[in-house]
Amino acid sequence: MMPANRFLPEEWESRLEEIDLEIARQAIICKIALLEPGAVERVLHDDESICGASHKDAFRTLRGLLYMHFNEVVHISEVLSPEVAHDIAQRVRERLRHRVGKQLGDGAG
Image 1 (cartoon, rainbow, N blue to C red):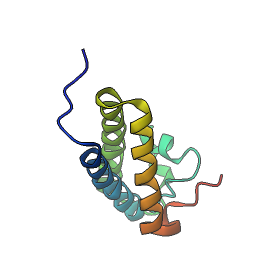
Image 2: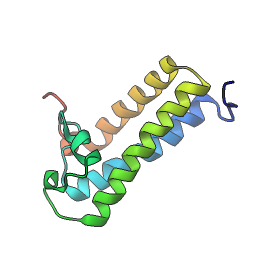
Image 3: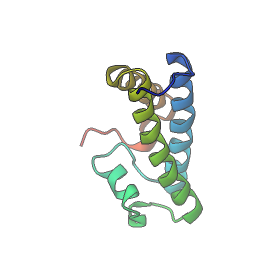
Image 4: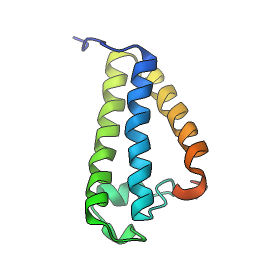
């Protein structure tokens, strides 16, 4: 049985964007180039050595927000579709790139 969909796609997108904007803020505080390959995995593995600036509270918040982001995408996939979830996440990432520039890395590898 599929979970009930209580939000429109635009509302899901707004929720995900709020989470991702806070992820960007915390990554900037910690000076983590989060868009670089392997950076997210290092944060999720609790590897604080990735930080360019030590800030334990921001790192802990960042790590929790990354899990929240992934849970939100899974939920969107379940109530709408995996394709819609992918499209929403992609639009959010592009808007964040425009807002924060290269502060999170360029993700080029």
